[in-house]
Image (tube, rainbow, N blue to C red):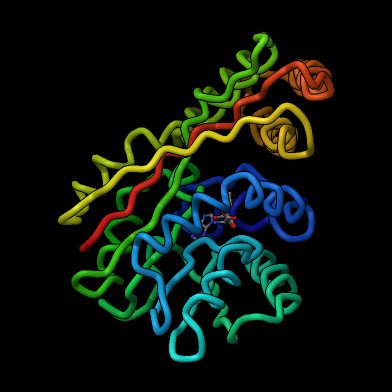
Length: 279
Ligand SMILES: C[S@@+](CC[C@H](N)C(=O)[O-])C[C@H]1O[C@@H](n2cnc3c(N)ncnc32)[C@H](O)[C@@H]1O
């Protein structure tokens, strides 16, 4: 499915978002929230999200976290769900309309580089798995800092792709990770950006930065296949960079699927380094 960011028309002119948006990407983002969501919610509470908070879910995707945030802040709070891709916002509105237990969310089409919101207008800014897709992530950290009031918190989780593993080991996972990282380099992004996040948050000016690592692992269930699905979705974008052929990736995906079907095989999902950073 074509999307605006893939054509470089939105966000930064240089960014290429390698994954699907809208309906085509919704099931994978729901799965992603099943894997990483419990830690996200713990971090949001630790970052101070509570009744009355004014909070921004930046690059909200299908709004899986936005709805939960809206339930936490209640009628006296405010939750804005922003994404650069309008088709994500369509799915987010539909998804959040089905959760009955929260106050209305404001949906805004905006680039994380330049959101247009006034400085200091939020108590908390949340971003998950955004910065690894960006050519200039430091600019977005600076924007998050600008949006927070003094004492407000950034809650941000990102990706350490090299940490994905399979035991007993599967060569397919190792090779797929190499191809994806090479594709990312060709696009000017770093799918291991999570490792840089704590230092980058300090560089952005945050006065206190706490780090959290989260690496769920599975023996069975659809969650075990999250990264298999992610690589399958990203494959056309990786192939377009010229680092590998679709046929080679398809062969690796078959091996990854076989590993997932074997309940003796543990698959550790990508570790997600995260920060809670106070302004
Ligand atoms: C991997 S998804 C994560 C979505 C959501 N944060 C989550 O964890 O479920 C990345 C999201 O970033 C959005 N995105 C990419 N570039 C962006 C930009 N420059 N500004 C705002 N959103 C952007 C994409 O449209 C997509 O919804």
